Image (cartoon, rainbow, N blue to C red; front, side):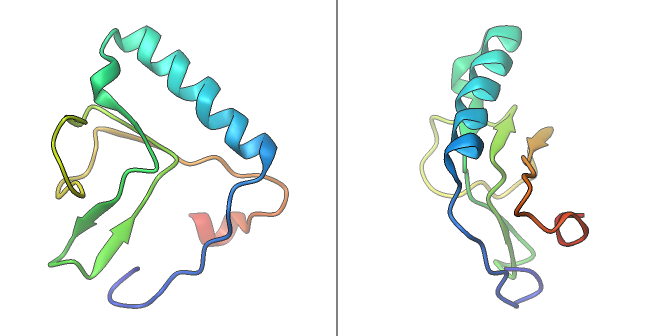
Length: 89
């Protein structure tokens, strides 16, 4: 959701899903803090009018319940052949 408007999202394909696992492993290994790496974590701000769920987030405390209310220091979104890169920007 962006400024109260729905953003349609399609499910991830196999290649996209595999990138999640490989990326999370690489980032967790580099950061040495597995509990600060999350996959498809919901991030809400602007009184819930803006919602995102990046493929990977790095640097948030993943032990807390619920959606994150602050932007992560690093967010990773994988684009594939079927994604609209202009819309992702």
